[in-house]
Length: 223
Ligand code: PGA
Image 1 (cartoon, rainbow, N blue to C red):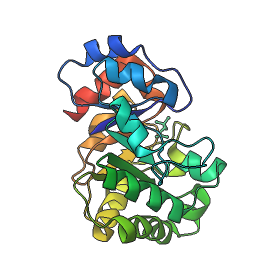
Image 2: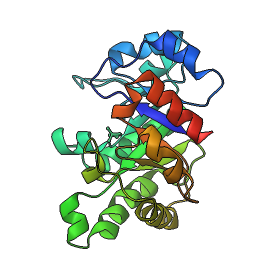
Image 3: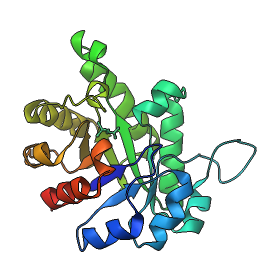
């Protein structure tokens, strides 16, 4: 799976992207306001977040059934930017993932350590807590994918080496049986060697997914 996380950007024009992708497998995760355009263009479309209740007094949130009404087929949960800037907790992330899976959505659940955590030797502890909190609530599930996104590699141009990514992915799979995507400064010129690692099952692409040609090139590397 190659997934493009557009974050709070407009991204490429959906029908142009759809045309350029041809038969290449892909997921796009645009801002909420562009979900309908992406679905209508025929793109496989995920939301960037989803709430755990089907409806209720939760200002600013969107539920799984609401996404499904639009034809959205999955959601990212627990992105480090959600955890870092919006106070999302391991339990909240797990609840979002669980509700989405129960509703029939695909889920990309993000985990990853900060640079300080890596430097102090805490990477495995951090990953264990994050992955197990998702696994405890969701178990293994056909529609559950984990994304390993070292926080220090997101939007920084610093990519984990293929060896380092492989090591983290193998560790995550020892905790929970799920495909694991790599995320963090994936570009057309490093995608192939990252994706060649045995336990790297795809990529979650931020910045490079905003450029049509870059994203198509990464999807091609993935196929
Ligand atoms: P990046 O973002 O590719 O721009 O580093 C990845 C992500 O945040 O999912």
